[in-house]
Amino acid sequence: MASSSPQGQQINVTDLDVPQLADVRRQLEEELTHLSNSFTQLRQAQAKFRSCIENVGQVKPENKDKTILVPLTNSLYVPGKLSDTEYVIVDVGTGYYVKKTRAQALKHYESKVEYIRTNLEALQETITKKQENMNYLINILQMKLQQQASGGKEAKAG
Image (cartoon, rainbow, N blue to C red; front, side):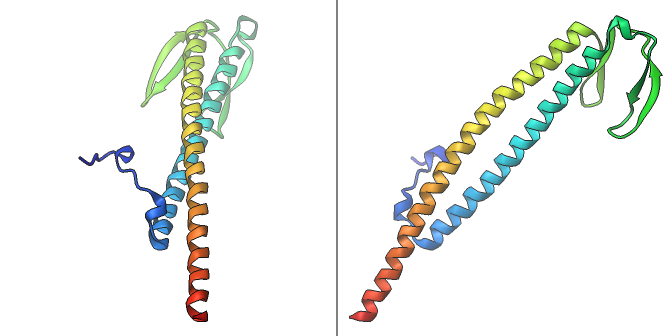
């Protein structure tokens, strides 16, 4: 019984002809591009959470009532004074913000960084396997093309 999952549909690539191999190669290239883009986006998210950890680190009693630049957007900052050094507002996603202590905020962001790290490792393994599959497929494709080329010469010589 054939399975609908990719693992259940194993095909011996050496049995495929050149056009089929080229199709599989295109599909693998698309998958690799998608996985690489996902990897990049996860790295950016991880960097953003690390930046949040640094920002929470700047909220400390010795900085109370000091003028700081408060980010309103990625490129717009306004001057403000730090009046509460015990609590911070944490963006927990989808437009929700929660008041947390500095320690809670640090724990929140550190767990996010760790969660992304484990996902990056798993994604890197998948990318590596796909690249190995691609290299194998390219070798088979080159071998088939060489066979076609040498087969064509023999037919002309005969």
